[in-house]
Image (cartoon, one colour):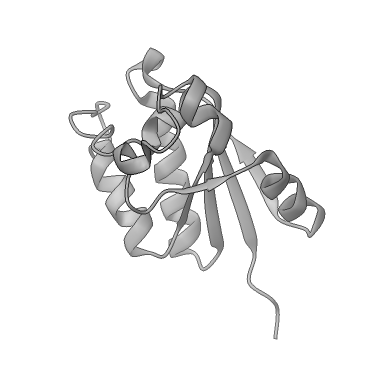
Length: 127
């Protein structure tokens, strides 16, 4: 039996494009999950903003579902939501001990998480 395909989607873009790349990244991740892959979505640099509670609310790109729908689908399909720990401070403005503003499903991670998974054969896709 073949092992499950591992995918890491790296999202580096925040609100500067009105959520277009975030919508595509979450949509792509949901599609990979529906196809049977194990998917982690790593939010880093400006993309770390999407790890904040309610950040996806009100974001909708024409022709796509609202971003919060993709986020809910991603989590319902057992996607893993990772956020770059240092980026929560520099890009989201969180201070030490203020992690309550993060989405409850968001897990802090470092760049080594992506490097380790890639070295174990995970496909990495960047938005």
